[in-house]
Amino acid sequence: MPASKFATGLQCKVCGKLYPKSPINFCTDDFGPLEVVYDYAAIRPHVSRAIIESRPRNMWRYRELLPIDGAPTVGPQVGGTPLIRADRLAEAIGVDRLWIKNDAVNFPTLSFKDRVVSVALSKAREFGFKTVGCASTGNLANSVAANAAQAGLEAYVFVPSDLEKAKILGTSVFGAKVVGVTGTYDEVNRLCTQVAFKYNWGFVNINLRPFYAEGSKSMGFEIAEDLGWRFPKHVVCPMAGGSLIGKIHKSFEELYKVGLVAEAPQTKMYGAQAAGCNPITDCVKANRDRHKPVRKPNTICKSLAIGDPADGYFSAQLIKNSGGWAEDVTDDEIVENMLLLARTEGVFAETAGGVTLAVTRKLIEQGRIPRNEEIVICVTGNGLKTQDCVAEAVDRPALIKPALDAFDAIYAGTREPALV
Ligand SMILES: [Zn+2]
Image (cartoon, rainbow, N blue to C red; front, top):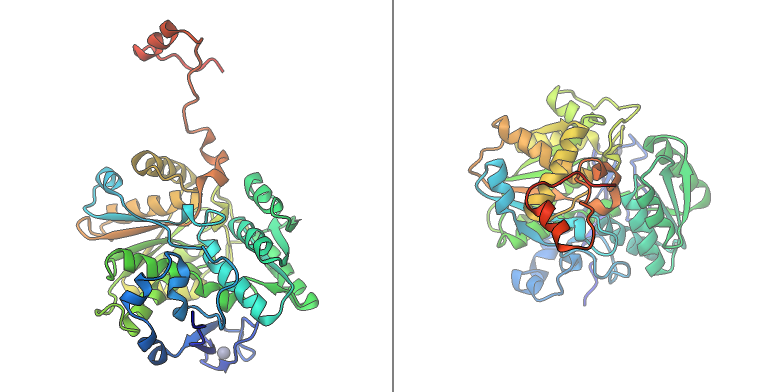
């Protein structure tokens, strides 16, 4: 397969200054974040619906629009997750057409982070890094550890020390060195910036961030392709650092620019956060120019608990410019909607999925999303990693003797509370 060399460089999102493709993540003039730029005119003759559909069903079928120069060397099977037509959930929440993009079953670590990590680590190899790392709220830690193991890279993973046990175990098991830091995600992130600089390591969401973030676009490419090469009217997306929502929107713009979809996207983008950590939704709702950092996030949804999001400003702008909106929800609403999603569609999403569904319902009830227009909900992580959050909300199993009359008794409706 020909290598993708259509990414031409990096560009400051604030002043527009151009930089060569290198492991840097901010503009030296104004500290603005850097974005990968592509030569779309050069890409156009190399892509068609037939070419893409003939390739294996994973994120690399869109490789011309991803920022690696050679063949992908990390995460060859990432992506290609199902877009589920969610008719039972649609009925339950009173809308006509609803889809779930289900990255809870992404390979190998059951979250959308495998998309960004496979791009970042493929790029880390191109740059010659031998050691990689990340600051993480959990899912990213799992993904960096697994993909680094498969790639034979040494990995250091820095996490807040109060993280869910399942996410820490799901990192250590891959042989990564896990460092728990007694602080918030933002403090962990600052420490990692210092470590990356001092040791010259490739941190996927720090010095490799511009490349890393591009991996999220593949989620949007897949949504459009699975809808029959068209764009949905409304997309609801969870927000932590605020990157994913912008990249899904960018992916739609790119499909239009390279001619894979004939009509320009009119999609309205909606952002979802937990009330206990809502810097971006607050920025949108209060119509602020900049987000106010949340110093002490307090929510069961740890995967979205980034108090000072790197792309906060840009995601808030994007939401408003697209005609969308943002909302945040309580921990009780998160749990209720994790259960609703599981019980209507058989999808066990992590807390962030509960956030996204709860926010979708809120926006529908507010009249911001019309009930008769097509909605896509992005589910980004798996509930098996955050089981503690729903443990108290589900019934315990009934406990009976191994005898038919014992079962008859509970089946007859006298279902006693469990004995344990
Ligand atoms: Zn700049």
